[in-house]
Image 1 (tube, rainbow, N blue to C red):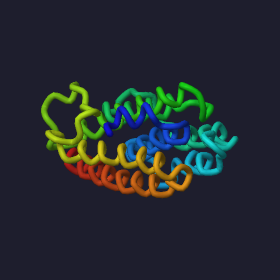
Image 2: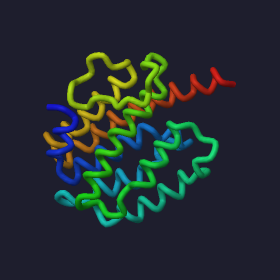
Image 3: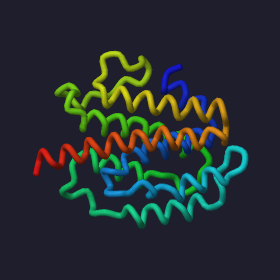
Image 4: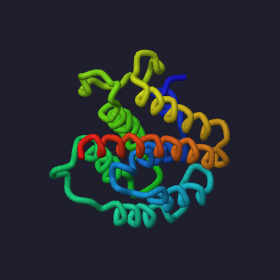
Length: 189
């Protein structure tokens, strides 16, 4: 099943985990540490049914305070995209806003990975296809697409029990992106 189809079929928890995982993998661009989004992961795991626990809004405020950075002035496009993902996070973990956010995070995260992938083609403005698998994609982008699919499949197959393995998938991706950001900084400095 394609990423677009998985997002269309996901329940609220799956959508929240999908968007949160995309944002989590981009945390290195916001100078965040590995626990930066922990309040939102905790709120999501404390929820019942499809809804996140009542701590989602409180956790979101804590995350935004922790990752508050400069306005977009002077930041590269990848960091600006990550800040927009965080800024667009819905206050409530429910409703159609969650689907819109998860889909937007998917697109933004793939774009971030394309911008940072030294093997990506020279036209980063083009969108990353989310319906056709990973053929023809650069390694960093292909890996991000696979991670996004894996997170949604884990939540669809295991419900709340899929959150821990989804977080593990996200953590692996964050480590990869942190290494890419670090290499890029050394190359510029």
